[in-house]
Amino acid sequence: MPASPPGSERRPRPPGPRFAGMGKFFADPLAGSVALMQAHGDVVRIPGIFRAYLISHPEHVQHVLRSRMKNYSKSSVLTNRSKLIFGENVVSSEGEFWVNRRRIVQPSFVHGEVTTFPPRMSSVTHAFLDEWEQARAAGRPLDLALEMRRVTLEILGQTLFRARI
Image 1: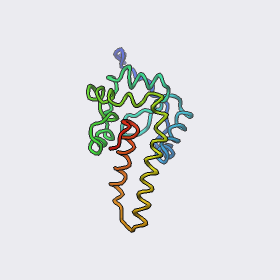
Image 2: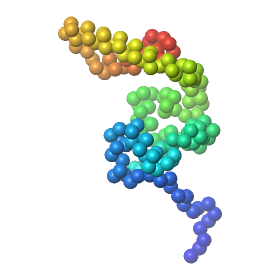
Image 3: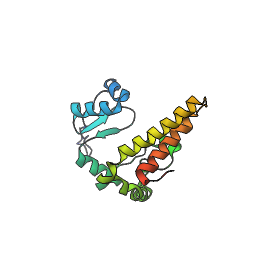
Image 4: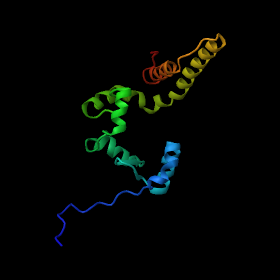
């Protein structure tokens, strides 16, 4: 039997559950992610049709998202479909577009700023709840999809730009 060419040997895959064990992950992604990390370590292969990994160690995250980001593509069916809904954005974009968008929002994510997010989010949420309660009391119907977009935009405006949108 001929020897395999150099570099062609299969690398071991990171540990991970079988697809049947993913129920908790899909039911509650945050708790499911924690359970997967506890059971399988810092790099977990998520079973399915697409190659997906859950990474949790800060050095690994920095490696993928900053140091070697050109080695990792965000392109996937999920990302491509999310672009249809949300457009090109910091989460789904790559390359120079991502770098430019990240520079715009980066100042909002320094520690001192992030700690102000919860009170601002809470304030916006309470203002909308008050408005909706007035609409309910007056018997005015609300378009839930529109209201959720309004809440989302207002929270983004208040947290990232300290501005009303």
